[in-house]
Image (cartoon, rainbow, N blue to C red; front, top):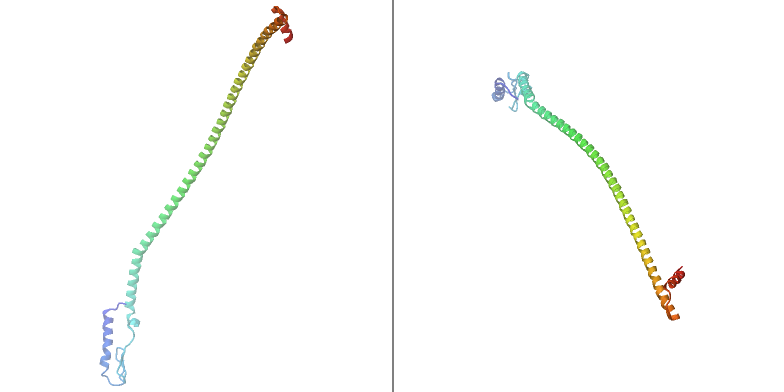
Length: 208
């Protein structure tokens, strides 16, 4: 605690008083500054502690007020504005981060919705393409089957016609061979010539 020059002088006077009091006679009364000398030991005793002295209260209150005002101004002008600025900056940053997070969430939701819609459209389009491909494949297979069936039927008809022609030719050849064979047999049996018309009629009669 700070003290004035008057207080310092008073304190110095009080500290010097016991030195003079040592020469006083035994049983001497306290002096004007409130100090006394013990009659037996000669040791000086100090008075009231200066901070507790009522005569110093005014200066102490003055310095207390000045110190409080200094700290109040220091806190209100320096410390508190800095703390307030830091808190405000932090609040603005948090608000900005929250707004950015909300915007990013909205954008992600919109992107997800667009992706799901595109996926549904792609699935629908793929299903249509697959169905169209199946229909085209079925139609192509049916056409190829019909074409192959027609070709087989034509080949079968041609084969039947060829077989019939070959059969007819074969049967015609068999008749001629039978006529020649019959003619030769008859010649050898009867030893003479045979009428060809008779042999042909006989072979036809046998063939039915």
